[in-house]
Length: 450
Image 1 (cartoon, rainbow, N blue to C red):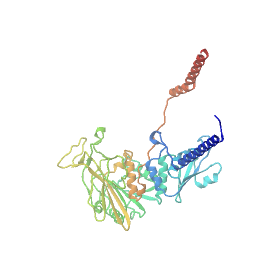
Image 2: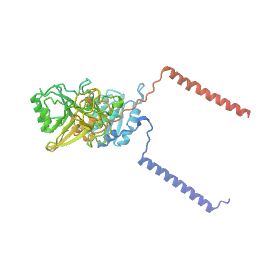
Image 3: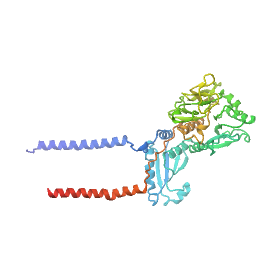
């Protein structure tokens, strides 16, 4: 074929057009890769993807978050701590671009480490809105809790009534609420006991007062102090586990509260051999506490809570249980039966919220006909912890922090005994290479003979 000037120009034009289109395609791919990012998490429990709860917290934090990591690059025992921290923070930085991280090597800058109060290699100092928290545990739950503490701002103090056999927020007995108290502290709350037999009043800085199932009657002057606290706009969480109010009838009257005698019987878990006094809540009234909350909760020995709406209060029955049960008003035994004449057919409301405006601000209270669901024994059952945290966040006015807790990581460790470890090692180092050598020899021999 004869190559003339026209053909040369045509080929030059085609080649030039190809180069231009190739450059344009590469630029377009680069632009799309910069503007739009996609990822697929194929790990068990989606361990490399942030939970919706953590993403919710990140979106609630307006403004930059600065992280200073005091970590070495070459530690003979811990390895490259800076790389570990970068990997851990990568999904958070994708979700919040103004989250920045910088590194300081403790060996090069010991004075900076001392000034920051850092004690371990790999410790992070997280700063937001002129506040800071230290973190040395690399889990989503720990990081989310730290962010929640920073987002909460001013310290909220939760006082729990003491001196009458109540469940304690710092107690260790199965009956107590000590584990729940620790979780509140992890979320940025401060907890304190309050004995109104000694204290002159409920402290003015109380974000929430918790009355958790007194066992003996309160003195009249103690009840008057709680009345004044509520009348002046104090927030209250009242847990009741019997039909005896132990002298708190005047406080119940402020809410128009009616407490029926009897215990909830729920047959939902009967097929799992659970006792009939274990009431299960699977659906909730639409409310800030239960917004996007889809976890079951369990309430042992629950009681019915009813209330007439007092003037100025908005009353919301929140949790109903025993869809296939009833309120047992008679003697409770191992095999209770429904009595049409005296028992109340389910569903039974066991928790009610109260809201009103006072002096230009929101006042909130909640009464729950059960104290066991937050106890050390039952806190870890189903969604009890998540619901309890949401309750206190709402009562303290931190609606934006109401969220389900970040998931825990599934244990992915593989435990092998010594025999299996030797078998795997022998297979990889001896048997598998031997198979390759034999296969190579056979192929070589066949080719030589052909």
